[in-house]
Length: 383
Ligand code: KG4
Ligand code: ZN
Image 1 (spheres, protein in one colour):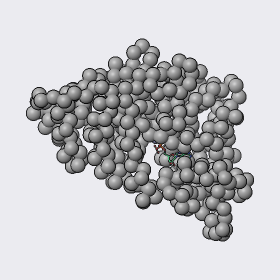
Image 2 (cartoon, protein in one colour):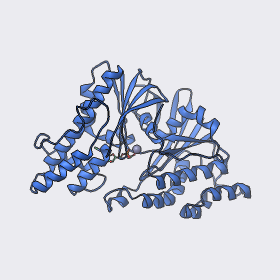
Image 3 (cartoon, helix red, strand yellow):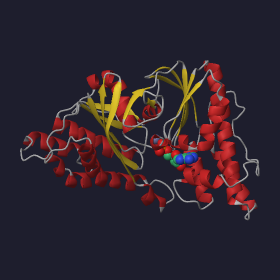
């Protein structure tokens, strides 16, 4: 069983193909083309620019993924005119993509069993390109289409383990999880605490009321002129700073719920910089990071305790943050296993979407066909 997955929810154009035999998965390809440098000029992701870039990138990224998976052969045979017209119709709003798409007509239908695509949450103009592209491929190749929730994908990125228990990409198994579990999902668009009874059954017990954690890192990095994306830049410069130099607020740390708020913390950094123009950047970055992580760790630990969780799953771009990883591992006692994605899988990728599709396959494949109506997110992970 092989699934080809497409991810375009933000600024990465990604395609991955994975195969499942028994309980073993093999990564046949995992291509990620990042637009980060392009958006950096604007200090953040510009949705319409992301849309245009996905349109330009999807065909070459798909071809690269098929080639790497050894599923690429060119053909002289023609697809039926009706399916060509149908897939052009599906992509009518993606003018650039329609121009490049005919390259796909020259490829033999690959030996895959289904196509998965991120349906949300994410930036709508970015999501639509991936969805329409996936729909067109599903029509052309007559494959079922599986919609995948992006945040569920981030959960799966933490479950990849090889037989020795280490993270590995080429061949892996899915970690058996002692339930119940808590997932902390921290990305550029989301901050969520999720209680998991079993894979596929999630309830959001807390989320951010304003900025997402990654967004706060990005905005503070902008104030410090550290460029975009801000998370990696902040954590790098923070290594040289004193995390206790400035005591920034820890919003909602004592609130008796699992929600977050990062906008006040961000404003506190802004005011500090206004009042202390000579402040050392490394100290500001380290102190901000310390405050943000304190809140994340405190609330996560409280959620683990309340749920009696036996596993903590961490996912999303901010899961790359070394301090966050270390703090969570240190705080969790031996009775709680901490599952972290490998560094290369913390950011957006299509491998995690393919993997989530395998598990959501049964219910989705039945209800959704390429020519059916697929409802666009942003749908959240929910029970
Ligand atoms: O999951 P992701 O790749 O995309 C979204 O779905 O949003 O997350 C991107 C976010 C960005 O805000 C980025 O600054 C943040 O993850 N990030 C980090 C680190 N690496 C990436 N934040 C803190 N520390 C890091 N090391
Ligand atoms: Zn993400």
